[in-house]
Length: 615
Image (cartoon, rainbow, N blue to C red; front, side):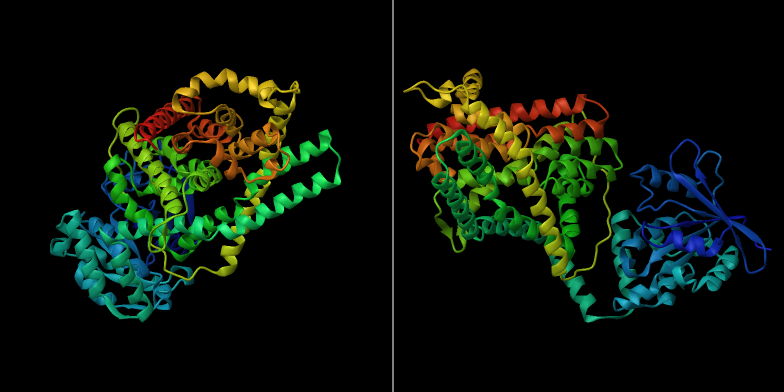
């Protein structure tokens, strides 16, 4: 009869523990929650080779005994015999992913150091071999000082040998555990690398290439440099590659406006089509090529496997402000839109980490700001080259994105020392394989992003533009009076103007801030519609918006407007999602308040600094 009554499966997430648990216990399982926590407890009866039953527990996946989540805390307490009402397992079965051996060995050494009879299940060896990696279980067993049994849980291979090792584990001499079990965490990581390397019998050229790439891309110093260099190239491409396509779309918009003008007599409907629809919505649609180029780079980085490595690189940098790499993916998603970014924070276990990430997500420059940035940069920044393949316009755009990132990190630093005070949590994640992004998947992703943008242009932006055009059109101006001065929108802008005049904003700019609360892109449509309605020259209404801005705005004014949108309060949809994710209005209002204060302060500082420098 086996001396063990209980055993537990432990290991990193995605090691195949649950598949192994199901294979060993079959239908003899029961599922409940651990008392006092909403963490699932799976237990089942396993029949040992001598015919005696043993209770097998499938513990939650964990990366370390230094718990960073409720799941990890349950695992820590159970294996150390500290969980109330739960007996300490008499046998531990460590499940390792053979294809990610080095990472999984770090936690394995912590488990072995507990001094409990232990067996290692080297799982998914078939997938490792498929990827060109063949391991030596005997060498691994010798290095760890515990039995190592190759298994393929989903095919139920190696289960008999594993059961036999579990049965004989009672004979282990716990005093002869390998010395690496007593090492510190940094030493365990180094030991894990050496043990994994010594256990490799053969490795494909492709896998060696991937390992060498990781040495460069994950290097503590080279990694961040390469990441920021890639981002710099992206923003250069947004201007350099998109310009011909933007010109083509502008030509179509001008042609459509000319066609409407020539085929219809002067009327309310004609003005609505040319000034409201074409000048307003068309001024936003024209930036579709730049948005597609931006997302093309993001999709390629995601599907190639680089994005996960970028999160790993950023973990070290974000630790300085009290966050971890877990916050990187939600923040990166916020470059597309803050709404999915805020929703993605659900994967962050620490509540203070999650709240901090929610509050700074709007500072990531979402794609809705891109039309605002690019139209103003194209209007006031010359398209000069500042180096081989480096354009001044792309450099300014890169600087705006970096300003948002720096602002987010500084706000996080303040929050983590005040309202969301706490230390940075640890961060470990699986590194996906490098691969060439499937062209079909990239094209589908681009189509989805383009459709979302065009749908916004056809719904939110269209509706906001029509409302604004009506406010700009009525009441009608008297002869010799500016239509903007006479209109309802003009009165609204005049009421708001005293508050924004100190930071250099013109009345048209102040007016654009109101509909921009619906969607950032509407600021561009608002400016285009305002200038179209207020123009006396029929031909001038067909000019590109950037020509209007170039003629009417000073450089300090334009730079102040750009600074405003780096920190501008988010759209109403983002505020609503933040309320839902934080279960109240307190933190969304804090978010809106600090964003408005930052936007106003930095716009003013930018304006007066530019004036002082004589720009």
